[in-house]
Structure formats: structure tokens, C-alpha cells
Length: 207
Image 1 (tube, rainbow, N blue to C red):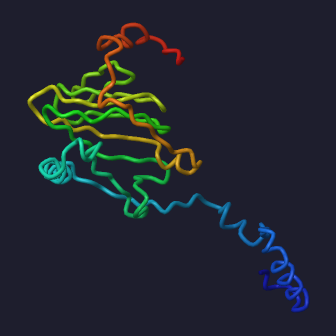
Image 2: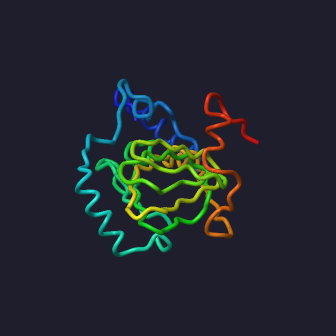
């Protein structure tokens, strides 16, 4: 409420607000400076995670919960300023995922897009629509929105990667949803590396 108005006008304005409220109408001039501030503002704050510390907790989780039960055995890197939102920034999600030797993480798809940046281990894979992309340290694997994907580890060592997803962005549009395949893993549709051979120098058309 503007405080520089005559008392009579303030009372009339307050009465107008009360009359509008049942109709779900609200005066923009009361909130404009909060909606459009003079400078960018964020609730996220600077934070740092130690890989060795996170890995210790992740390996302990590997002892306590199976990939099958967890579906995705991931420790979320949650920004301290965004407690409870599973977000590392207001519009991005990040987490470290562990898959142990011989494990598979069941096939699903979702409205969010994802990337995997491989940190440690070799011989695991992400299968996207039935084509395996094998993981080596520092590889980057992309999973577009609404593509079937599962993970497996054919090696004798744990494999850890960074998951990045646009979960908070999709959530802000109320467009988050997922579906599980009836079988734990997608049937193989093409040999590993097929997409890279065919489209590695261009872009793959989506059908």
C-alpha cells in the first residue's frame, strides 16, 4: 500500500483491494519491484563439494542400497540456499551416480534432458533407445528428453559419473513426468557406436 496517499484515498484503495481479492485480482504496483528487481537476485549461494568426501558417502550407499531398489543410486548436490529443492542452481540439478560391477539401473524415460560426465571407472554404459554408449573417464554422454535409457556396468570396478538435468527448469513449467519400460533394460537396437559413426559430424534427425 502506498504510504504517501491521503488517508481517505488509502482507505478507498484498501477497500478496492478487498473487493478484488475474491476475484483473484492483485495490483501489480504492490509487487513490481519484487518481481522485476533492479539487479539480478538468487537464493543460490556459493558452495563447494569435495569429490573424495562425496565418493566416500556414495560408496557407503552402495553397500546399503541396491541399484534395483534405488532405481538411480545418486547423491544430489543440493545448493545450501535451495534446501529441499534438489537443485544445484535455481534451474539445474546435479548429482553423483554410482553403478557397481554387474549392476543395471532399469530403463525409463522422462521429460527432463540429461547429461553424464564420467568421473571414474571404465566399462559401464548408458543405453539410449537401445544403443549402448560405453563410458570412459571424461566422456560426455547426452540423453535427450523422452528417450529410453538404462545403465549397466560390465566391468569389475565401480563407475561414478556426474548427472546433470534440467529438472528445476521443467518443474517450473509443471511439465515433469516419467515412464518405466516394462522390461528392466531396453532391447539392443543397434551396435555400440552406430550413432557416432552415422551422425558424428552432423546432427541426428529425431523421429
